[in-house]
Each structure stands twice: as structure tokens, then as C-alpha cells.
Image (cartoon, one colour):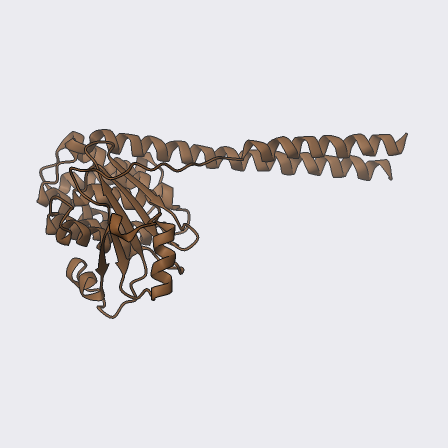
Length: 305
């Protein structure tokens, strides 16, 4: 009788655990959009530090089977200094990217080697690229070694400025503030109690408020930032708040028109809210699993007491 009771408890535990794991399984797929005749060949930007073997690996990761079907350019330490003030021109440049432009669809970012891009997320890239003025492009990012991922943004800027097929240059003032935005995002994401998604949600929703309110002064910007921090229940030091004040006031002074990307900002904000809710639900699920097993172990122990 005791053996049957133990067997039943173990069976129930396995059943619940199995359902939980199957619910967490996800599927992904790729698609080939071909070459857009209006914008020319996709642009592949390779980091200067890559060896020949690593370049071949990155091309494979980016889905480049025939180099004659893409336009290749190289991003260097000099480019890093040109686009981001205060950087070191001797920095190692590994992050690479592939840019495929189109007439619609907004900005789509895919990190094809997520295990090697350690700080910047797909949504952080997208947010910064919206600030830089990039429109309707599929961006794929790759690196053969572990890197923060910041230099990929520089490569994308160079692709728009130097490539014969990019179609239009980006405003240099906007690319500089976009790079600053990415630095602020990754810095805040390292703070205790914050995550990449939470920080990106904060930056996105502040942009939405700027598009809605059209702030005229720095004081207006500070109020928007403070209100959004309170709404999202995010606690920051005075120094970190100042980072946000300065960043978004620069955007205000540049008169960046976020009205034109309201739908993308809304979609990004909604996606981040869903991801954060999913994380919270997952935590609740695993807590329930933990509680379930504690009850099982207590039940088993009681059989022998």
C-alpha cells in the first residue's frame, strides 16, 4: 500500500513537470526576402579585427552564401572614434551586421549569435536605430567571439553613410545621440533591480511621451522622465536620473520627430510589456512547481514518520 502511494506521488510530479516544460518550448523560423531592386544588394559590415576564418564564420552566420550577392564593407577603430566621441581607435572590432532595406515593415533586428552579444539586446538596437533615423530595414547582428555588441551600431551607421546601395545618409547628430542612448541603456541595465527589457521599456515609453507631449524645455523633459520612472516603479540615483535628463534633452534639442515612428514605438512597448509579464508568470510557475515538490517531499516523509 505504501509503495503504491509513493508511486502515485512520483507519477503526479513527473506529469506536472512534463506539462510545465512542454509549455516553455518555442519554435522559430527563418525567411529569405531576396534582393530589393530599389535599394540594391544587402550590405554586410565586417569588423576590422576579424581573421579570414572568422569572416567566413560570420558570413555563414549572416546567411551569406555568395559574396557577389552582397556589398561588403569593413568597420574600423577610426570609424568608432568618428561616430562615438571618446572611444578608443585601437578597440577590437568584432561585431558585424547585415542590413537589408525595404519600403515597409519597420526595423527588424535579429541577433544571430545571441551567445556572443553579451550586453546589447535586439530591442536595444531597435530603439537606438529609431533614434538614429533608420527606417524599414532588416538588421542581422553576429560575432564569432563574446563582445558587448556596441560596435555593430557603428557598422550600421557606416553602411548608410558609405555604401553605394544604402540610398541615404543618416544625420550625424542623431547617430551620436543614438550611440549615447545605447550606452545609457546598457549602463542602467547593469543596475540592481533592473533588466535589459525593463530599461528598454523605460526608454521606449519616454519617447512615446515626447511624441505625445512635444516638450519645449528641459524642465518638461525632466517631468516626463520622473513621471515615467514613477509609473514603472523604477528607482534610480540622482546621477542615473541625470543621464536620462541629459539624453532626452539632447533629443529634444535635435527636434527628433518621434511622431513618425509612433506605431513602432507602440509595438515595441507592447512587446516589452508582454515579455516582462511572461517573465513574471514564469517565476510564478516555477514557484508553484517548487511548492508542489515541497508538498510531495513532505508527504513522502510523513509516510515514514
